[in-house]
Length: 327
Image (tube, rainbow, N blue to C red; front, side):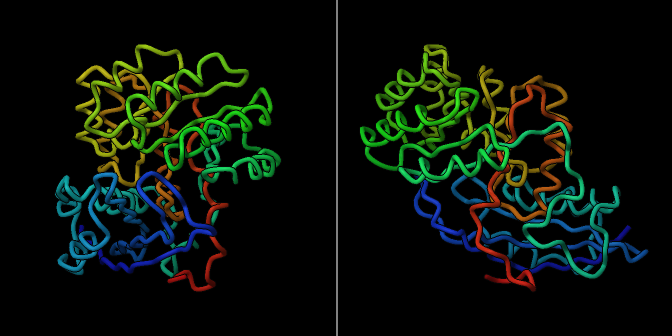
């Protein structure tokens, strides 16, 4: 069967700049695509790359889409190369949406902040706190909204100052709260030791430290995971399916953070997770509701350890334009 392909780029502004160890992020760009079958039904997909997570760039994704014919087949979709993982996810998700009947209106896609039409009832959500002292002011409002797990970026400022803020944060959070620390690979080996020592034996649960060291420091992270009671989660190290399989084969049995929208083929991700009982946390890449629904379906299907999914990010975006184009 052939499908009519249409696509267009979009961009959304963050309400305030998102600060990570990779730098400052102002605008989230992506590509919205649609596949229309012979009956006029439309499946929506989204390509939302993050190049510093080893995915393609937005420009590479656009070039790929522009080179495709206006009518494409399943064979074309399933032959998208592995160096375009966000494209693999976007096109396969649109194809799955057609088969399941999700968002098949021919008129227009959902707005970026639309609630998913498939809300997995058993999933709980983690909310992303702003970096630095701003976290001390925001967790309370998110708690009132129902969040009980929070993620806070570290490795973006002076470690002594961050540790002081961390101490204030854990003293202010309720004892039942869970906190995740995300370094985005920005710590040195000594700094990672310092953070792990600080996290052990605290009054609230530090669920894990996410990607404390850079991708090339796998053996050191493996040693750290065996030396402390606080768990370590791999994120940038397992951004693609190949990386996920490589780290598993090298012996990683701690937490894996899976970002479905950039990891690659959903069908191959299912196959890997069904073959291996990994401890996975499914996480957002600041996608719109289109990719979020597809990612949450995978999370509901493949999560094994009842960890909160990292999709509590809508509060980070400015209000959407009425026509859902560029902001």
